[in-house]
Image (cartoon, rainbow, N blue to C red; front, side):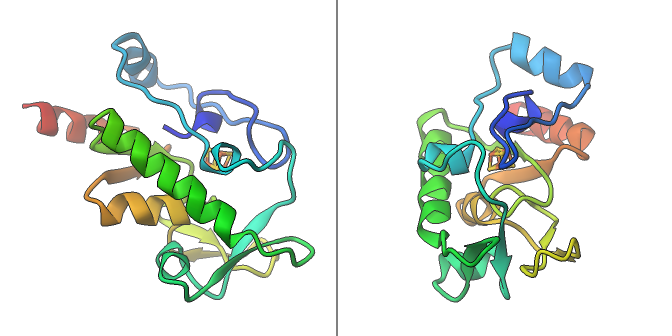
Length: 158
Ligand code: SF4
């Protein structure tokens, strides 16, 4: 699960998000949750400049066809790919089949991301970590799909 959703202050602006859902509390108490932040795990600082995928998707970044760019123009594609790889290794290590990642992030977004122009415009797409996990058969949900994730957990453990 994205660390920022668990209240950890790892976002680019030094803040966190929190999801008040009893299911998450239950999963934590059951020891089901592994927390990760692909960007910080890849060595990026807190805070850091906002970044967006320019003219592409998480998949096209993985395929070398698009870059992740910080506001101001610095290319940080390699950090994002490293972060995604660390996330995948964690999933393999703990036999994780389901991930809940923060919507709209250039790493963690699973249904939409920002369009790469720092204009606040969102497009249907996914981030680099979400794309890599899905390529490897891991089901990815956002914080808006907790009930669906719960169904998937029970389907996989049935
Ligand atoms: Fe949260 Fe993912 Fe961004 Fe880290 S990379 S701050 S876990 S959305």
